[in-house]
Image 1: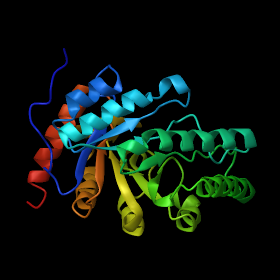
Image 2: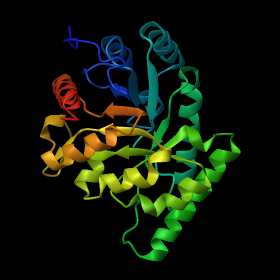
Image 3: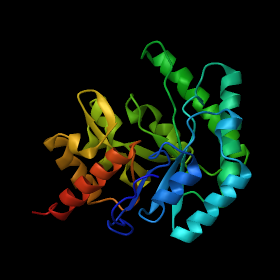
Image 4: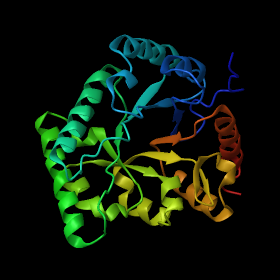
Length: 267
């Protein structure tokens, strides 16, 4: 019904190569069945926090069986509609409950990391607004810690603000970073500088084409200068690299492109 990848990329790079659970227009299990034989890891994306959008316990059991069958691991991307730093207390509590629920639900899969967003919802960048947001995040992290969740399980994704805004929180709670290279390109941040400063706590990289204000595209849309920087980063990284695209065509083009440029990276 769906086209398969033409070859396996398992252990093809010094890092684990992954992609999203929504390459094919189907459910989690069907995507894993199609992708599992060809990649090292799958990024299970939970776009929304509503219970009916999450896999059931039975589906988690099937995903575990597929992981064993295909020698596959998973990482978890938490919903985009939650905000641990929200000003409203009820929204923060809902975010904490959702993160806890998903961590418990997916525990049988032994995920490599749980990626969360910490969206900044302030109306300005003044110090008081930033301080309140940071304090709210700290309150949320304290509650997660109180529930027995280790900071090392969580990777905070780079978004549309400088990662320095949450640097103290990362250190205080022993959190990791999900370095989204596409986001860094779109918002004009220095990829090499971010990697050099936080390399020791970067557990996963999201990699996708980004150009002219558009991201989550195939890698062959990257500019020559951005590609050069990315290759220098990948040569020093041994964690998870997730091709964060959402179609077979973009995935195939990205894998072909990455394989080609990787082969001549030292030329």
